Length: 295
Image 1: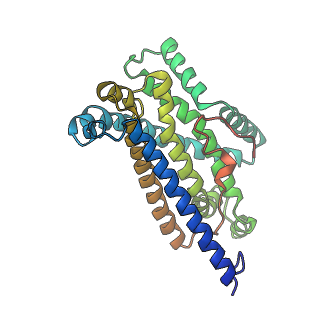
Image 2: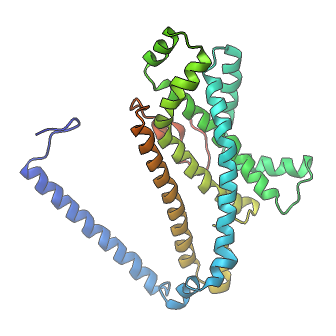
Image 3: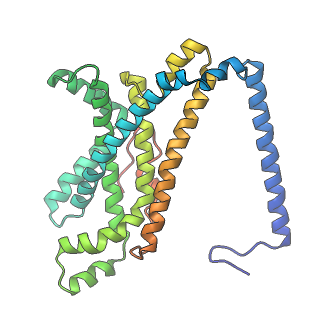
């Protein structure tokens, strides 16, 4: 019995797979034991270092306010970057050469600059040319950097999503007299959404995580920076970082779970062609914000 991608494993292959699985589980358990033992030897598993996270004061004073700032900056950046990126993607598909050239230059320029540098430029701009209060200037700078970089990446995702559709979709729509705007609005974009969704979600996760860059460099009071205050008060830097990492994992898992549910609903609507946009094309996992090359 075979599948589309490979032959079904026989008895020997199944036995090898079980052996490999067992070896992996034993190695993982050994690694976990070594990590826990090392933490215990250094006193990092002592109750007094973890007890603060059971009490409400650490959460209400540090973690929840930091999480709120992270979610606020990430949400604002997403709300701005998504429509801007969609416009940039459509601009790259324009029939007018001057539009494609201008938009392409914008996209490649901001994709090539690290998001950290864009945040620093944003901070300097708000200092020199605006009257934004110093208390909220880091938030503005973080959002500016995230929007400029990620809108350019999303623009490429949109372009690639539309280009991934079969050319017959456009030809059939034109054959029944639809104009290009109608073809894009009613035929291509509804189908391209499901193809773009995995890459878009990956980029949204990057936006959320990259808020930590502003905290490290610009003093933005987001989630990760709270480890300084917590560890200074309770001398528990490693437990604090573990708890913060767990919060990031939970938030990003919730985001990806919602996106998976949404993708399933869209695919059930039978508007998808099954095309997918590879996430790796857009350098979506680069937390430092370095741009990828042109597609």
